[in-house]
Image 1 (tube, one colour):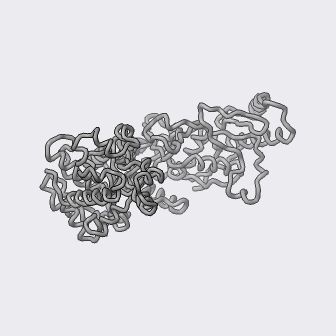
Image 2 (cartoon, rainbow, N blue to C red):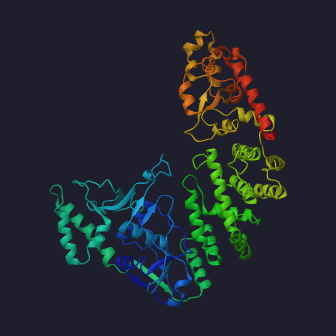
Length: 584
């Protein structure tokens, strides 16, 4: 069957009316820069590759889950919304080209939410909405040879919706979506004249020519050019054939990654649930505070259904896919419980350096679906403490590095062996990790590495010393026990400390032996107070909590070196107890 062609406008008019997405398609993942490059390529007459459409006959219209094209992209990707096929004539599913068509839809009729750096992911106000504009004064032909193939030639740019860009003699910003109003040549010339009346000042003839050329080119590529959208229309109704075409077409063009192929397989073979819908929804639910991906979820599925945990396509056999679907509701529940638990510790996307370290915790929760972790019984408190200790130990020692598949497999064996006991098998897992040759702060070398950590890169190490301290930056801060202000040359000399010893003191200032975690309120109260003065305002339990030596002479600045040695001894004793100590 030959290829067909059409204008962007004609295809655009049928999006979410005739053209929809099948469940086997992935999320929309293009960023704003890719959208700009797509529009630039179209304006420059570059081919944007062909598309693959699948026309369903009316009797098969209700056999497939369909999804709408989203008109709002966002940083990090956007899931598509489910749609109903009732009343849809000539239902056509886009098998190849959804990222490009969605980008055109967003640029012409939608918007894009961009998450600025250094803002909270879950805060809706941190996601301003942007619209696509074209600078009609930019000369696309005035590009240096160095920039010719690397940079966009046309002046496309996203601007925040609430901050409309101002025009001047150098820029004339035209909202790209307005081109949809230019539905005929006569209408084009009328609207062009209206735009020209908005010039803030008289412009040169060259600028007028560039303005008119750019506006006509935008009108032309959207309304007139039938060569831009070229598509093959598949009519065969065989499900397996279409899935095979989907995979092969993507491999032949821009290759599907492993995640896409696996999602296609699960979506086409699950019978009770829609895999795409379920996994996308789970990602959305957990993502406000956490980085979670399709790959992480599918790898967790392999772990929890006792399959080979290596993330390979051949491990997702038909029988394995069926087993995952059978266990899906329990798997989903365990994943959500795990993220809720680690968020209560203060872990989130900002400080969790490994995701695979969570999989054994999820497995434990999967084994004990009804065991509460938010109560105050001795067992519940113990499990919260032990899971938190174990998690921090794994992160400090990088246990889930290069060979994490084998580590996961061996830990799973331990969890299965201990499945009948409710307690998290902290010591049994650690014994296995040590047997595999990993370090868990159990020898002199690992002790030395722990103590060598310095401010400010030691929050995990410090938090390990506190069983009830969350890691959230808003609730705790690293404090210098002997304040920095005391280590000026003037102050140290006043206390009779020699220049040589002053250098030693300043090196030890940022050692972990001089650091503790304080609540933000406490840290603000303490500030630069000398430690001996500050401690007069604290209860005696403060000493034990922060592992402070109970010798007032060591709290004098001249005895700082002896204080560090005494506190390091208390820290090592605490570490030794953490490996083997059961609090209940």
